[in-house]
Image 1 (cartoon, helix red, strand yellow):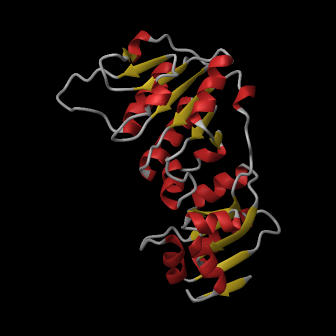
Image 2 (image 1 turned 90 degrees about the vertical axis):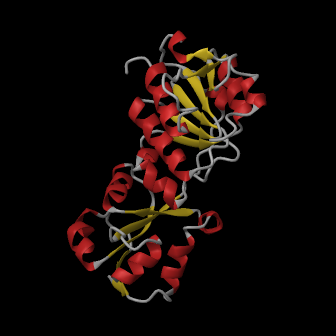
Length: 257
């Protein structure tokens, strides 16, 4: 097992580049930070390119790493450099980006969350994680939405990308395809023409669109939905954080919660 102590090492430079979208696209890989995420990737049979850990973390977890995966012992300073934080957990993995393509015309069941221009990485990660917790079948990442494999989103998802479908797609195409296949598609809006989410009977097969933090979902998508929903606010706050609003809608609309 190689030991890497310098941030100038070529491997370290390559791992650090995975913090950028360009670096991830060029290598077709992304980085996991922390044993929980690495363990989730192992359970999901993800394709590993390398595992990197400090001496202490390597002693704890090397025996759990899949056979044949290159392992590198790194210094605390290298760990901080790769993580981009001063408090890394000390173990990382480089794994392949998913290559799956998906035609929505074949979707005939399940609950699907569609993210329209949700820009904050923390919100995107929270929404994916909540969709996983609520029992959704998949999340579709639309145009303008934060890169789901950026470090901040990956940390916020907490491994949920391994538990449900996470796909990129044209949300107009998805909305039309789900509707053709008999799945209602609900939008989330804050206006007088929208319906209270409480008026919708929970089901197991539908799409839910969550829009941009400031502007909401696009007018084009809003015109194509089965219904647009709002969450009645009893207090004096003008609106809810998109992650909170999405969570309320997901757990309320999906039957069985």
